[in-house]
Image (tube, rainbow, N blue to C red; front, side, top):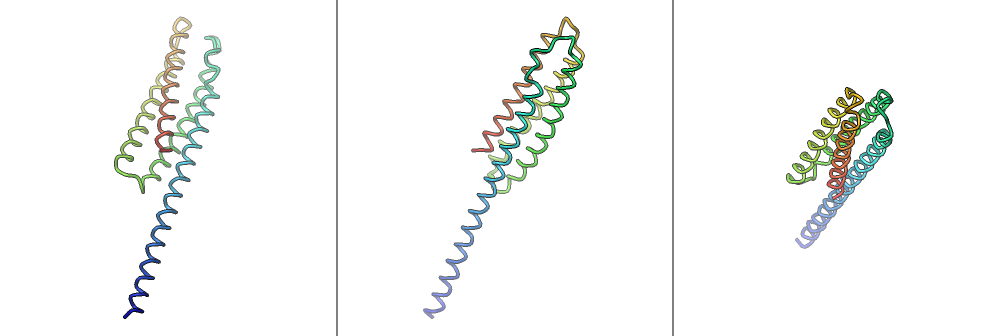
Length: 159
């Protein structure tokens, strides 16, 4: 009888230890995934900033050049948002409902701001020489909003 209790206690201890180890591994996997997401977001922001950094220096005469550069940046942004969305959904397995909801809201906000950025880009593309400076400022604000949304989501994924 004592031997069977000892065996049972040993088995239970082993199961608990394996279970704890599995949870620890799962948490480490989620943390690794979050680190990948953060790196992806930072890389995306860097690439996009590179595309848009000299916008203030462009004059109306270089409108076609700047709109081509911006379109490339927006394409990169779209690719980063797609990657980010996939990584965010992959991280949901162990997340609470409130964390899932918060991340979905941040992702939706990022997509909304990206849409506004695209609309500003269209205005920039269709601007006249008279409206160029105002439209350019509007685009720069829309870009800043997208960058802030990226930062908020990255901060959330790190917490």
